[in-house]
Length: 107
Image 1 (tube, rainbow, N blue to C red):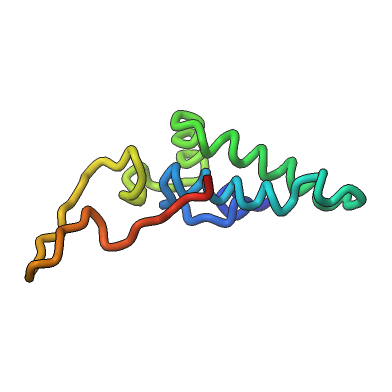
Image 2 (cartoon, rainbow, N blue to C red):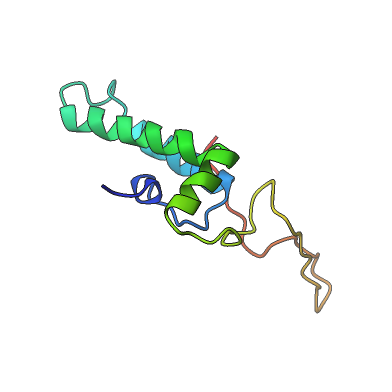
């Protein structure tokens, strides 16, 4: 059995924004309406939905991480609910940015 993180093709450190974007991307690819004759796509979509149901809920994800022996402080600090916000201090007259890398989820 593959882990839920492998099913959604994300890192265990992924924030909820990254998990949601990965779910939406995979759901579009493997949706049964787009793959009407494929039983494999239907099974894959079932697994994707099951993984997203656990990883999208904060309490269920914590319980899952404990069962998989993933440390609790092992999280990525990106997204809307990040614990810390850092400011990059400009060395010249360029404007400061909150993060050098900004993930843009599929909306």
